[in-house]
Image (cartoon, rainbow, N blue to C red; front, side, top):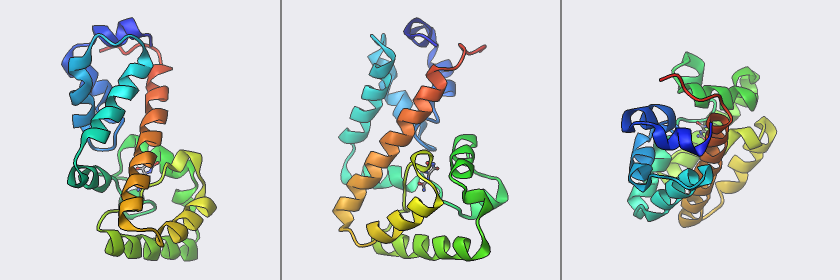
Length: 173
Ligand SMILES: NC(=O)N[C@H]1NC(=O)NC1=O
């Protein structure tokens, strides 16, 4: 999809297409709408990045909380967003041994208790071993470091989701 196509989308079409690039936060796409026309496709990503950076600390925490647990209940029940389902399956989280699943669930719980938001990592640039290692390591961070880290991971997830969309054929909306 080229930039002319992106610029020609109505607000509703734009949100339908880009509303999920930040997990369960269509506001991120809605916030960049007024920046049209975009000069190039990476302007969309830059705009979303700036929107995220402009959030207050509690806003950033809210953004992190929009993310489902990795290998959590929603993966088991098939109620994740299509994007998250694909990402978690790709990292091997849908086929964990019972012991691995219990270990990740325990660490996710510990992480949430310590920081008050879920552990977020870009699953597509990771695998289950790296996720487990990162969970253990990041649990030792300060809360402020972790919030920054989680926001960086959200931007990576957003980048890859945008790449998927932009390399797709133009939408038939
Ligand atoms: N908790 C968490 O990291 N969730 C996610 N990571 C990812 O790549 N997709 C997600 O939904």
